[in-house]
Length: 135
Image (cartoon, rainbow, N blue to C red; front, top):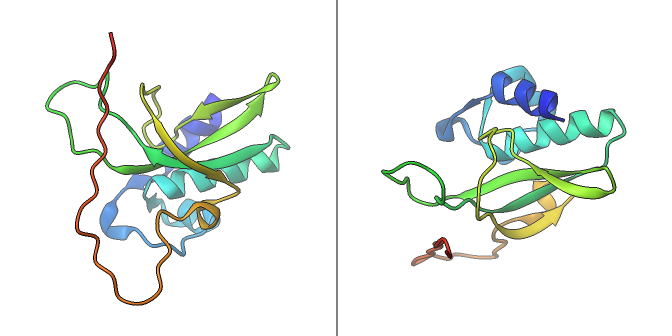
């Protein structure tokens, strides 16, 4: 599984400016750019091609265990694969274990677990997520 994460991590360059909600896993591979959603989609596609059950996860990553200065928290995507009789977490975008993930939803892909689905005009006034390490 780590080989899949390493390949995807090395293949895609993270770039918010190039993000688009309609990018497929194949397009992420071809274009070599994207955001965490694209990393997760491509890794899931490889898992499924190898007959490894995989599901898309969305939520927030904490800054626990990361060196200061801490970047602002961000909505994130990763995936889980069913290995050795249990679901295990993998994150090809960051490609390193992280402490304190705040899972919001799981699904087949990003379309299953949209952060927000709205109809008509709307304005998000604020949204804040934080994590604290409990000793």
